[in-house]
Image 1 (cartoon, rainbow, N blue to C red):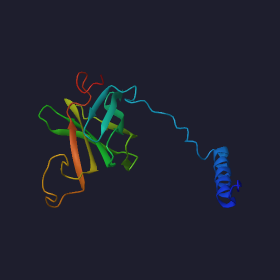
Image 2: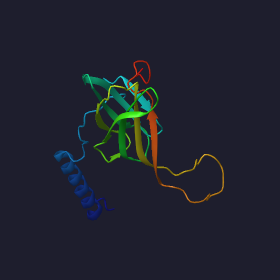
Image 3: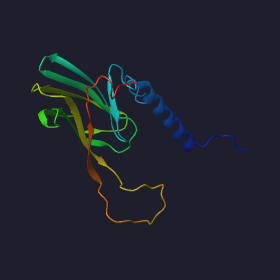
Image 4: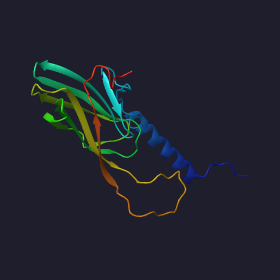
Length: 180
């Protein structure tokens, strides 16, 4: 009766164990210590959301003829990245005509799931603005169909990178688009 351990499997197990112990000792198995960001982010007074992006912002008047909008764009749940986010602040007079405008591009080219990017706009007003509208647009890869609805396997060509645009009417209002 032979009770010895076969040398090859035993040597393999010992080698793997030593390698794993070495990796654990140098910290390569530990996750990087990133600071968790609270959601929703604190300190913003306005918000709006679409199916892909949530915007948070504050409006301020550092000078009598300047409006500053600073905020955060966030992709909380979409697995497809939001690309090329642009934000535009437009001053509109009583006859719905544009009298002042400024545009900013988000510093991050893509927003992946749970990623955010700051934005800041500074608008020099003309003095005849009755409200400020905020436009935001981005490219979003959409399959173009709802997979829950039963239908034919192929229903024609679809656009994969669509640019979508939204308007936030009276973005700096004291009563609308408020964070709750």
